[in-house]
Amino acid sequence: DTAVSQTPKYLVTQMGNDKSIKCEQNLGHDTMYWYKQDSKKFLKIMFSYNNKELIINETVPNRFSPKSPDKAHLNLHINSLELGDSAVYFCASSQGRSGSGELFFGEGSRLTVL
Amino acid sequence: AQSVTQPDIHITVSEGASLELRCNYSYGATPYLFWYVQSPGQGLQLLLKYFSGDTLVQGIKGFEAEFKRSQSSFNLRKPSVHWSDAAEYFCAVGLSGTYKYIFGTGTRLKVLA
Image 1 (cartoon, rainbow over the protein chains, first blue to last red):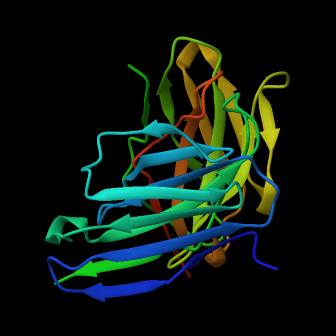
Image 2 (tube, rainbow over the protein chains, first blue to last red; image 1 turned 30 degrees about the vertical axis):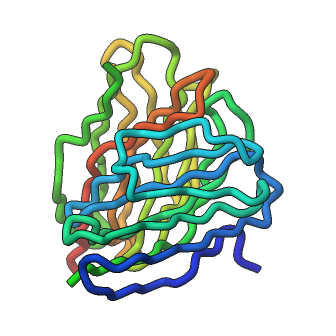
């Protein structure tokens, strides 16, 4: 039973389109994250939600809109896709606030914008 | 500003050889330190973590890491590398009292048969 699952695993789309990635965790964690991994493998935090409340919103274009319908789900919608949005997007979850909780990652969603 | 540095972008070792991956961090408070491994096409998996206490921590898959406060380092070691250890390795710092984690840029490990 997958702890953190993301769908879809692959997306290929044209510039200007809108796409969504869904994430679900069955670990009972209260905090979920979206990370972007670029072609050089650098991992950058985008957003974090704690109990459905947005708590981290890094300098991400407002074309990216996260949504957390409940604490087990965190979705990412991207409008007007650009070439530079091509990356692997990872969802993760953790428990607790202290920065000491282990992050559990999904397998990633590879987005290719043509 | 907080940061994590992994000086080695690529490391190649022969199977059976020992391994050390370097990690240095910059953080004013007591850090929570992590090592994660990412196999191709996969998400990141925790290898080990340090919060406090014994500065030598043991992890999964035969890995260990040593926290050295004076050097702001948390290097990952394995006495004998297996071909299946080939992967990308990330060091990370958890910022205490926050939800933030800062990752290093990763070290890609290649293992020669």
